[in-house]
Amino acid sequence: MVVDFHVHSTASDGTLKPHRLAAIAAGRNFAAMALTDHDNADGIEEFLSARPDCKTTLFVPGVELSIDPGEGFDKFHLLALGVDAGNAAFKALLERVRKGRDERNARIFENFRRIGIPDISPAPHGEVLARPHFAKWLADNGYAKTPGEAFAKYLHPCSPRETRCYEERYHPPQEETFRAVHEAGGICVMAHPKFWRFEWRKQGSDFDAAARELARLKEAGLDGLEAIYQANTQAEDVGFSRIALELGLLATAGSDFHGANKPSVALGMEVEESFVAPVMERLSLRCNKQ
Image (cartoon, rainbow, N blue to C red; front, side, top):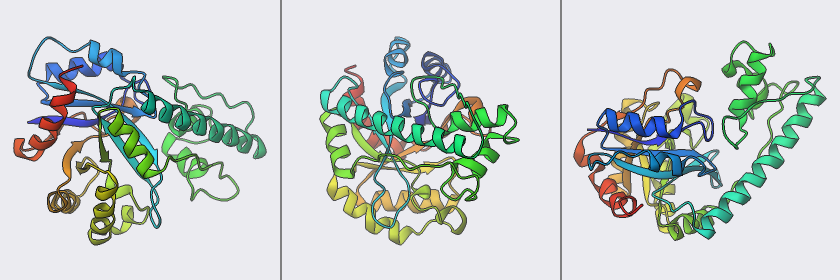
């Protein structure tokens, strides 16, 4: 079956509107699709409203949050799946995250002025202004050949010192985030665990280290793991799926689709029905009520 629990729309840094994504999911007979825009739920109403009157596709409201990665780790993106976007605790969390992003962006603007790039005016598709929007503006205005080059030169923690404009932003604590997602009726799934440590991108994922920390995170409230991911190696799909099974974590599969902003990434992940049956059952109890 085809599913995708990690999809971005124009509400953050994707290029397809939420209703278009819903139509594609129905038209291609996806078993499930989750809309997971960065740090906001602005596209969820449109996404859910566009659902056709059918029972073959599970449409999942979600948000992707960048949270505290934990000691010794670098990047923890959490997929909050099946959330009630109107829940007060969850809305308060999103507001704190958005305020932290805005404060970080102001520091990035100042860094650009410092190195002689004035009047940068990136245009977000939705209300969230993120580094991909900065990168696109830089490429469009001749400061880099491609958005990828702009990231490497200006917007990454390891960019050259003389051009580095990167700034860290607020990441909410793990347990606080888990509680807010659960209060909103959702489940907490770690996205792309291969990116949890920067060194794993080149050296391959350390499954023993991941398993030890994921066991602790499960006790703290983590529900699942994006075990199958479009950028994984085959060994990583197998390794993270094994960890999810051994720890009793729900397993998901996601493309991290962004449309034309990541043209090499296709929408949809082919998986065995048995692989996603537990998370489908868990989410269907929540999502079919919306």
